[in-house]
Length: 453
Length: 155
Image (cartoon, rainbow over all chains, first blue to last red):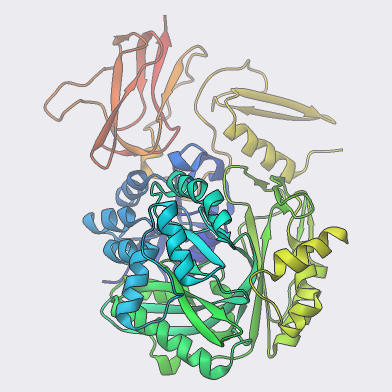
């Protein structure tokens, strides 16, 4: 059934991104905002904006019933959750379905089974996709010590329910496990309401690679290639690229096949990302987790495929399938994205909200900016600090780097401190140019040098 | 330094997020008045009232239509606003009489209406003693957060 009116349950650049595609497709739009965002760009861009509640997200963007009530009361027949907020809450998918609203994302059961890392690992095993050697749930220090002995140090302890590094810690010895286990479990309990931990073998030199997929919900899955997001700080991505050219082509083909196999096995619906750890020394990869939402870094994939992934999601939600076959997906060029966060990288990444007094983004061929801020806007202190994403695309990675550096140099922002100077430092670094980086490179090599600059 | 459009936009945004009832500013002969009373003018004193919507969404929801514009409300009337988005109900149940009608006397604890969110009903209280003078929201329609529901003349 074609979507007539779409409810956008998000804010910021992803809300605007979704609204733009919906408008292009002739779909009416309604956005639910908090009082702090009633005059934001997405709120004025949508055909209609309704104020859900006050500024704190718990009373507006994070209230499942409020969001679905608003979608229903405004006559919407579909709901896009964006990323973050409620996007990976099974309850939202379920409540939409119960009220005849097409959820632009996976079924509730899929989010439940694939969103939990342990059950996702079991499904990966069943689908024949390799995971990092590790354990099932670990509920005591003694069990953790025994498992680490079998796996061999170093090991990494992770929260079953979580992401974003919460509850995660690295152990190089028995002493590390004794010191970290209880704190990690408490942290996981506080962040996700579930203190369950598990252990994995730790890969010393790893790259974070991932595959973008879109499934139709009945077992057909199309992949849109891979991305490399190895430039991370505390498991938060800062720079993302498509494609993952540091991996041999034959291995990347296996990577795509593994992602398709895993998601097709789960009859995955809508856009998702299979994240893998690429073990550089062994030239092998392990499945890590599935993100059951559109991701922040989806533009780099769009730039190298010419696809509109939000449109693919809407096509699936309307019951029209993915809308392309695997043979229709072609790759050309290289794209790099840097995240612009209103944070001061020179001061412990302290959030820097406030008013934007100058905002002159770069333009030109192969340069894209996804943002929802304008000059004069005030960045509210209540939400995530990301205010934009700058993307550069060119025929080769070298040219994409040059284009990105020129774009950052031309970008004039005044008011809040941003991560743009750090982004420039990362992309200009010789290791980045030669592509000899790992998931620790940013913290171990780049940040110390950047802070001395 | 004259006021720029962006300055005004910022002030309006900050004012909208604040609990202030009125802001008056004079810069180089430019006068700016922001008030929660839609009838306030630069010559009238501060009055409580509805939230202004200087940059409201292009297509305001029907629920915002409070009927024919009433005459200017006396300055001392107080407004009960929606605590969140939801469906506004004047009666506890379809067959029951309304919680209050225009002219009813209320205490601060008197229940004046219901806001429903996915079958979850929350009662809204008057929060001030007085007489109900006007019910601006329509029974059974969606109201947004902070939208005026009814007006009370305090005793």
